[in-house]
Amino acid sequence: MAVSKLASTVVAPLRASQHRGEMKNRVRWLVIHTAEAPLTASSAEGVARDCASGADGRKVSWHYSPDRDSVACSLNEVYAGRHTGSKTVDERSIAIEMAAYSAGVWSSLAYKDLLKVTAQLAADICFRYSIPVRKLTDSQLAAAKSGTYVEGIISHAQSAKIMGGSTHTDPGPNFPWPEFLSLVTAANPGGPVPKPDTKVDRSMLKLGDSGEPVRNLQIFYNAVRIKAIIEDGDFGPATEAAVKDLQKYYNLDQDGIYGPKTRFRALWQRDKILGVKSL
Ligand SMILES: [Zn+2]
Image 1 (cartoon, rainbow, N blue to C red):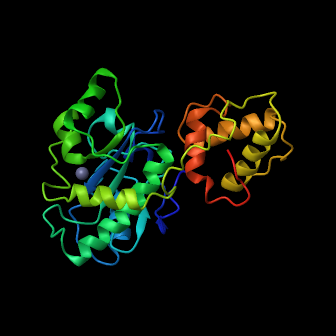
Image 2 (image 1 turned 120 degrees about the vertical axis):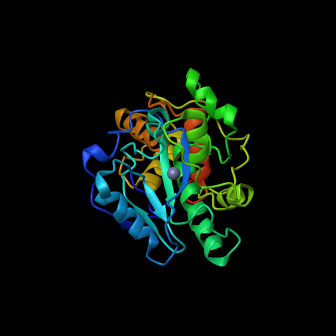
């Protein structure tokens, strides 16, 4: 899950000097940029190629560039980009570099198409990293300076203002945040969060447990991760490894225990998976 399934183009891997190495920290933020590039049909691919080329010896990189009909990936999510100038932010964020000008006409048809494509990508990223769909306030972001990471969506302008490293102001004061956030919410790939079913056993499932809840978990895992573990209802080492894999996929601590946090993420996806009634 290192490249969004929404990416239609992936450019060649970047040189090590162009990014900040492996993403060692938990991803806390989605950073929205504008590439200050024209918005045409092939813009996404152009912006990604620009990233890959390292033009003028620049050491900048970002993960995705959407245009009005496609998404290009220029940096695998397993790597931290160099997109804000702040190491703290770069090492904990995924970057979307929209093929657009911050001074563009956000109410135009072309920019509205771009917003929709970007929102789908943002929803996918937020879902996979458990990032709440909200624009952080400056003070919420500033808490990172004392080691408290409040998760959410931020702008490059905000990162530059609060965390330093750059004087960029993208995506600009005209970026339609409320409209964008509602599009992201609407595009949520997991759909609305299901109501808890009080009849279902909500206890934690762990090594040594057995029964129908464990079997449901195994069926769900096989369906969502397309990996084969035996659906025998026994929580053995293979199921424990599966839960750890699921936790990695959801960007959670990998303790191998199927508890409330992992279940919450799984519930979001459950309705898409046939044959799994309870989790
Ligand atoms: Zn930027």
